[in-house]
Length: 202
Image (cartoon, rainbow, N blue to C red; front, side, top):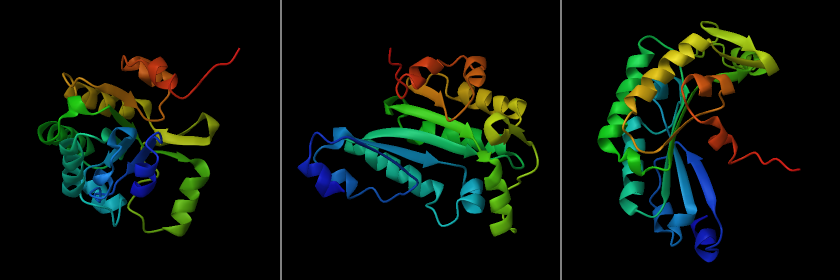
């Protein structure tokens, strides 16, 4: 991939990853054409739901390398937010740590969102992984278009706390696959986000 990017300076790419292996990527000569969306979660979520993926420490170290390099554009993704005992405290601690160890005002955007499943996916998870540690019943309900989400009150609570924690961070804050009403309730501009991917033709 690095070789392809070096040979094609006009090529732009965005990579979404949990991987901490970014050293080869940072040797790319056209770093400004590369965006890395680094996915973070609490260590509890990583240990229980993101098996065999890099630790939170490793992901933060990788993000630090990207920022120190100064060429590759960094995005921060915090999802899926998963409900478990004291999860809100853990996610706030995660935000506080990212604020302390990274320059969040220098990232292109920060996106966060709660889990959402297709109805059939829940049945499949339970059939294939009957001993999984996900709580697929509590606080989840079926919404239109066959989508299962946490209750609006729960989602809004954690979003508001994260949003308050990010106050003063000078970058774009956005939600992941949320309803327009939730964007409005949090005072976020959904049109700016949707406008990047949806074009209306006359």
